[in-house]
Amino acid sequence: MKSADADRASGYAFLAVALLFGIPAFGFGLGSFTRFGAGVFPLVISSILAIVGATLVLHSVMRSGEAANKILAFDFRAMTAVVGGMLFGAFCLRRFGLVVAVPGAVILASLASRELRPKGTLIAAAVLTLFAWLVFVVGLGIRLPLIVGLY
Image (cartoon, rainbow, N blue to C red; front, side, top):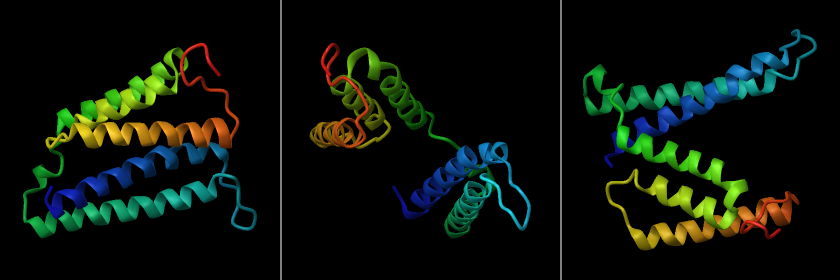
């Protein structure tokens, strides 16, 4: 991936996260200037993320000298793989456990890359499964089955 493409992808990711957390922030109430509400902090952070994201996208377009229509070009294969991996993980977590959901999500999301490396994908799946277990089950005490029927 070229540097301009990486910057553009990062910019879109920042913009997506800014929207994801910025829009619901209005529901928490902004309060007044002298007494801030619960929605001010997420709105400020989301605004900063949106500015950084827009700057990255604009900078990548100016640096690469591409037309504006290139900004809206999506790699539907990659987008489908990542969203499919997220949905797989979400739907399979309670039904099949961490040992199936996390590696399945990682493997599906790895299909987004055109330079698929099976060994690296399997290592990432194992490490992320262990990390998820340590954080959520051991650290936070959330009851998630490793394998269906086992807690």
